[in-house]
Amino acid sequence: MLAKSRFLLLVPALVALAACGPEANYGSDDDAAADAINSELNAHPGQCGTLHPMSTELNAVQDALNQYQAALGSDGSAPLRAAGSVTVNVYFHVITNTSGQGAVSATVLNNQIAVMNSAYAGTDNGRAPNQGASAQATSNTPFRFVLAGTNTTANNTWYTMTPGSAAETQAKTALRQGTAKDLNVYLANIGQGLLGWATFPSDYASKPNMDGVVILTASLPGGSAVPYDLGDTATHEVGHWLGLYHTFQGGCTKSNDLVDDTPAEKASFFGVPPPYPDSCTRLAGRDPVENFMDYTDDVGMFQFTAGQSARMDSLVAQYRGL
Image (cartoon, rainbow, N blue to C red; front, side, top):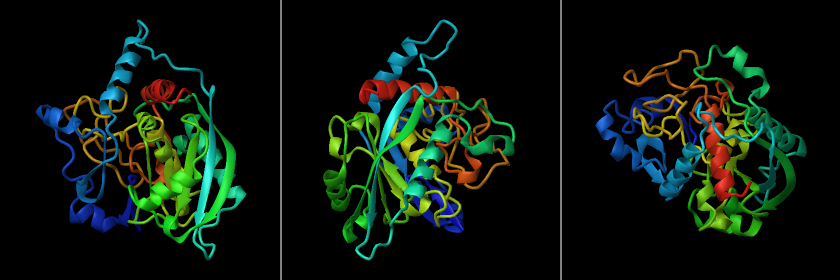
């Protein structure tokens, strides 16, 4: 069985959980640790809790968040655009090896778009009613996704690209389409046991050619990366592309992932809820393990919160012009 670290390491469960513990050095129940932890809010955790900086956007993101908070209504409601009112064009770049391994059918790509639309509409194929009571209501976000184009490229080096590699830079520079508003998804048999990775909204200004999401082809709907084979690796990575951090970002601190209605979570969750753990007992709310921004198995995740919707809406309006 595979475990998930949706930066995202696919490693055997016993190794991830026993050898060092997922995100073993990441969280703390001591609020005094908040400043040190918050300095890592723009990093993605890897195996054994190692932090891999992916962006220097934190200050800019905090400015955008301050603007969002200043715009809150007198009742605390968020200035959120209407559900389904923001259309995101999606370009799929299918990368195979020269033997044709990694090819993807049009049906699978359409199914992936359908999974994303279901997730961002708050329905997610009816999973929520089957998974028990949720800590927060599931939000129907403003975002809907439309397939704008697909291309297939055979390249043995790009096929096994890793984050920050020359292969990633070459593939994205050659294949990327559109502007900051457009979602480019690169599909490949990515290396290092990863499920995928993503750029954040404010990354675009400095590195527009690197913008987008990279996904393990086997994590597409019906793929072989069980239990991450229902298409929610893309859902999760697109959440980063729209501006979200992991639910466990910051550990047991009040600032956490900079979203008020996702309760603090000490470390990432693996498996399928229930049970619903409460790893930060000194703070309100159980762990949001059903959230798309945790590391739960695909079948167990079905939620974006209203606060996450508002954060995504604010950040893409500022940085992507969506």
